[in-house]
Length: 86
Image 1: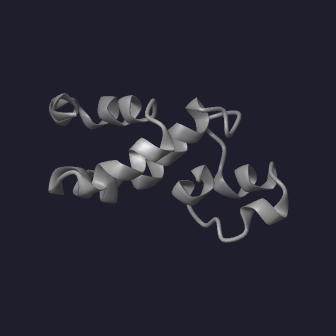
Image 2: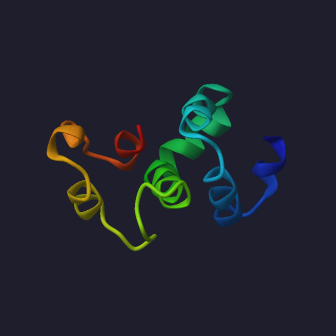
């Protein structure tokens, strides 16, 4: 993952979207760099992941609309893209 640190933010974000949600969740505890990166970009990271893994049909979709695509009970407590991907 050290290589991702030298990439422009946009490319790093795109690359991270290919990881599984489980692997993404582990990254912020790896180092202070990744903790800060995720803190600043968490919504984008998980929205991109949702698009790439087919949880939502397009990158332009909003979280409220994405939630409407699934049964109400499965979206209880979902208030951000990270929770949506779980």
